[in-house]
Length: 116
Image (cartoon, rainbow, N blue to C red; front, side):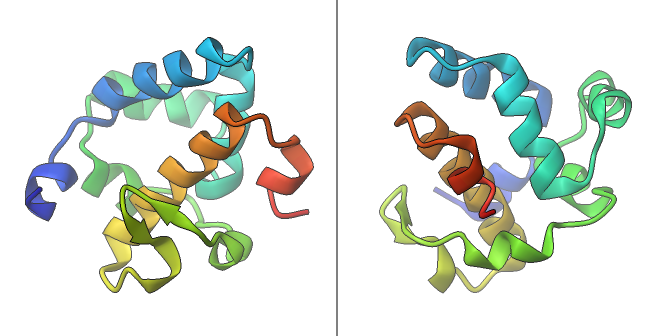
């Protein structure tokens, strides 16, 4: 898939899919939100503003208050790519989020997901 298409996807369209994926495996929206807060520095209010603004992934990550410094500890394969080897910063950040949600859905404990 063309990276520009991914970057221009509205976060508000993908967010419910993250929640659905987690809930199918017995996890919660609150856990999805906690992961997003941890990775991006958003809080409940600022995350909702991003959703309401219908910002795409590019803007969503550009406006993130701070990417967690421990994000670099996220490793493994997602969508056929090793996240730690993705060179484009934005794509790596998107895949970090995908990987964390995937770990949540696979039943990992929150402490491990958040690299504590």
